[in-house]
Length: 99
Image (spheres, rainbow, N blue to C red):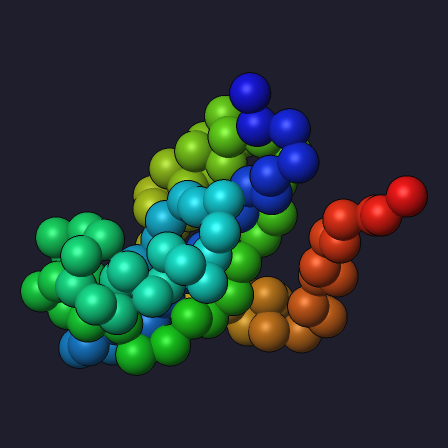
């Protein structure tokens, strides 16, 4: 069960101006793994330069479907999506309430 976790699809700019799309529940931790070369074969070969943005989704299933859909976009469509993401304000972080 994924209660309390966020679900995100994220995009990275990698060496060679390549764009990588992935799914994670903790984007910062996943990005750190990509930077260390331990997350995916692609980012091991083409290290990330920048985290371009992320999209929060309701659950893992929707996240994986969105990831697959973004991977099917053309280069121009991905660049447009990145421009749109950069216009959106960053999502507020969830905080645990103490009683």
